[in-house]
Length: 134
Image 1 (cartoon, rainbow, N blue to C red):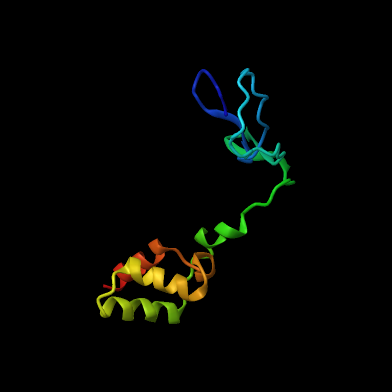
Image 2: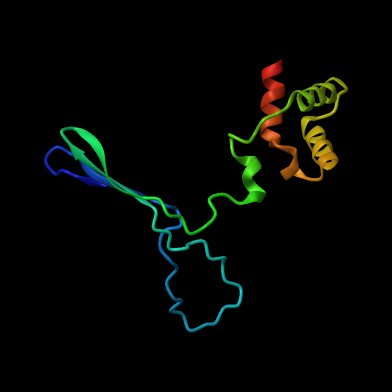
């Protein structure tokens, strides 16, 4: 972000992908075998904004990701994918009425469908649903 020195107004700013750039070479002499996974892919996605007449205007837009935007294993954690169906809601209500803890009910439901990724919502979603029902 660039600001004017006299009044502190923003003149321009740039938003980039979280995977922009690449890891530098390791300068140490000790060879390591267990490095962290590479998270940077030198992604070139960016948006440049410039202030003209008090409004931010898009100056440059590059939309060419060189990596998957979301891993399939973590898609169920996105807010747009966290939907509790009517059947699942009824099962949560029955489990709560029978005295089963919300954590145990969530574990039972995820075991029935073959894992958390197949369930369609997170434990926090189930907890929030039960609290909103009260």
